[in-house]
Amino acid sequence: MDFNGLADPYVKLHLLPGACKANKLKTRTQRNTLNPVWNEGLTYTGITGEDMARKTLRVSVCDEDKLTHNEFIGETRVPLRRLKPAQKKHFNICLEPQIPLEQAEQWELEERGRILLALTYSSERRGLLVGILRCAHLAAMDVNGYSDPYVKTYLKPDMEKKSKHKTSVKKKTLNPEYNEEFFYEIDQSELAQKSLEITVWDYDIGKSNDFIGGTTLGRGCKGERLQHWLGCLQTPDQRWEQWHTLTNELPESSAFAP
Image 1 (cartoon, helix red, strand yellow):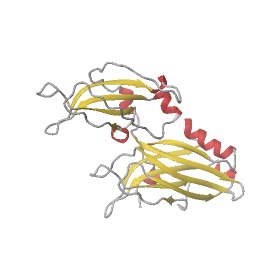
Image 2: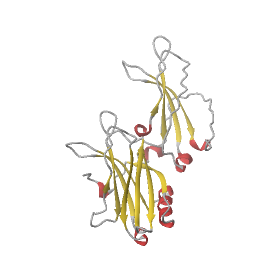
Image 3: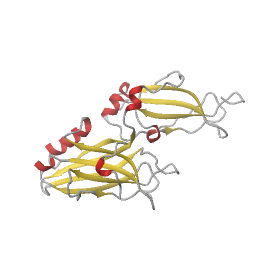
Image 4: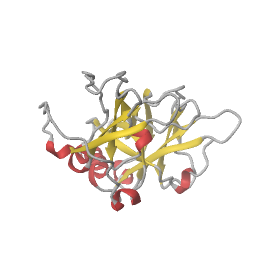
């Protein structure tokens, strides 16, 4: 790709469908070579069973150019369903020209990262314990390439607007760890009619905070969000941990962040 007949290659990873900026991983750049060796391990945190069934790993090789735009060399894609748990699999695949995104991918909700939640219904305390453990691969909202994220929770419907809880703010990170727990005093039968709304925000001084992403757990949901909620309701006093995908869909009740 360069005038000297060589290249300065690096590799980018993306999970599709999904927000490229929120889930991009990248290797170091190897200088002046057409036969680079990296031996690097890049890790995605918060991969769910649904991800393994429907997502594809996009592997792109690019040439770094400090004076102009980096140039695309080639790419390949590996469906995650080809992998088995706890088994390393090697692939030797030719790089192809850039593959256009499928129309279905373009219309899906944009993913903004992941959040790890812990739910427990305490029969002794007669209420719901919500653990906000950590987030991974959040979308960057600030010009420095990071965010200052915090998490809000609501138990809906909430006519009196008294159910809000909020974590601390973590500075300059896309992978914050909170390990904070909130408690909602509520009967188990009443909880079954509720839904838990989770939103993640970027804290800004002197202006409105930016919405990063959100998700909702409840009977009206599907897939792993519904399984997580039902597991908590049906087995009191048992802790249920689960990663969930954050999307750019902003719940109406959270349209304005304090």
